[in-house]
Length: 89
Length: 348
Image (cartoon, rainbow over all chains, first blue to last red; front, top):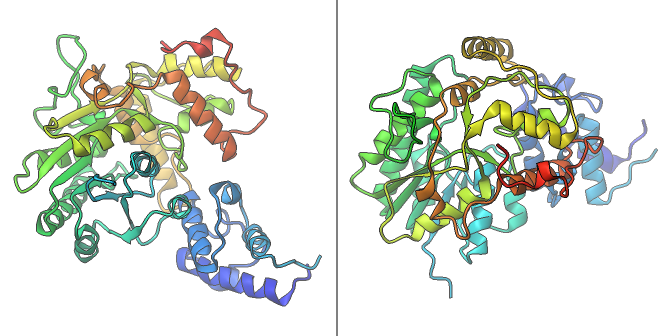
């Protein structure tokens, strides 16, 4: 997958937030990582993560936006969309 | 002009908390919303309410949060996710509550409203419904949840520095149950999963009714010390049968015996310990159902403006919320409001 520099910077910011709530080494926090299975984040921790993301990036998220997200790439996609940053396909 | 007291909601980000914030806003009161350092604040941010860090384990944060506050709603009592250690659970629950009461007294708070549970309502020996007067005379030897709730209530009722009210809600159902706590069995049934369950008495109540009762009690000039807010009591098996019919799925299987349900829940807690998974049946749910009392909550209902919401309307509200949040998939049959099974007010 190709991604823009802005998209990369969003991923880096998200990875730093995940490192605060997950116990797995930061090197394992990839775009493909699954929140529950790979990063050991239960539903509560996932909600906390998305709340942190909402605040730190000013995304103005609604709960309908965030429920059902299962992977890091899902979070990155949500954030870039809300920020108006297009991911190159 | 808003003449409501300055209020603080401890645990505002939770299921009941968000509904209480909505009820206070509807009354024209803008509550200060206390929260832990790490929690989901998205619903509260979208409501534009003031947020303040208020961790029940950190007295300095409580001192700052309580400054200038007249009424504290305490919805953040320790909730034992692991029922295997009742002594530790009770000690932590009491310690954190003591910290809250000390901070409130020191800050000059006038009234503290503690949200407890119908777990503390003792079944009567004479078979009549239990009321606020029916309290276990000593700590019930049932499990961690009951031990913690009973001990916390005793601490609050012994408090003499503050006005205190204990509110005991039944099984709360309704919007904003994002962690799908009490509603877990409902969601599983709607998905056609036939959840493993015990049987016993439950007293479901609309979470919005509990929120409205709390707002009324916060300004009541002579409130009772203990109030039960619950809907009509019914057997869990009967409720699940009605839900199965509502969603067009197979009727529920037979319930586990009390002993088997406790053993199953304990094994589940062992299985998920240290993982990101949650028990498919929580021990506190088993204990609440198996030891549930038939309740007469007329007093509590008198504090709900307009009276209690019929269970069918509560289930409608949760269904709409759960579909919006994709907790219940669209392929699950929507309840038909014209279906008499669905339209009746009492699901028994």
